[in-house]
Length: 360
Image 1: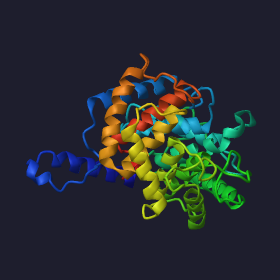
Image 2: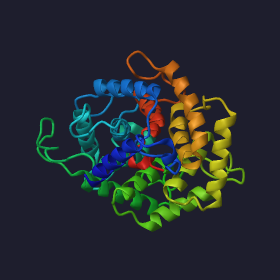
Image 3: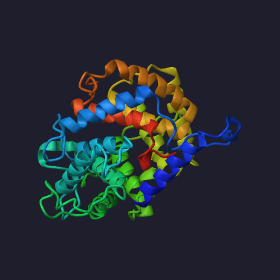
């Protein structure tokens, strides 16, 4: 609740500042919580949130090509990022249903959010996004009555307890991996920067929320990402060779959120992403929505002016891709309309900056 109060205070302060003469704003921060959000962004985002609220099932998740706790985590973040009061606002019920679904999906012995075996080799993606969703809800969602109200079922872990178990699983998994990173399953012995990015963002979100995450785990994973960065700045999928806009954005973002902008690999990767964003069309190659999701965050951390220019083009593009129900047309690499819509909305949620993980 302290985080929520602090956010309200900052928003009120920013609102008051807009009443001052323009010369008094000369020293204002480049990026502030509470900055005005363009109408086009608000219309896209509000319509998307209404779509998610309508399409959420009774269990609290969303049925898509690859449903599970990670998808629920994405949907939860979208609703939290809207700025609506999560405890009394328009999305109070969907938020609480999503939180319960994530916690119920967890193996209470291992802490694993991976879902059942039918979800195959994408399970640690679920674990990472589920952790991140809970981390953004922790301290903001009022848990009183979470399990006693209608749909609660009487008893369940608190958000903090569930998040601590999830962190423990991720830490144990990394400790048993020779690379110090993650692959599809907790017991995997190899790693890739895509899965590792999802897990690292979950861990960094948990650490930001006050959950203890061993420095050793973060440091080893950082070494994995720096070793995967080539001299050109591209971050490879499973080594420094190759790479894509998505994996390079992931590498740049992870180093930024881990507060390692001092590393030369961060400078190389972030400069590569900035140049790519200004020199290419909005449409990424391959996993379109997934790439946008990470590129938006990486650009905000690397270069605010570059992000603003790229974001303006993104919003113009998305206005053409929005469907009548508020979702977005399925892009190459999307597992379904829900996943694509969540990732797309989160790529423009950077405009709001209400999620702690989106702060600069």
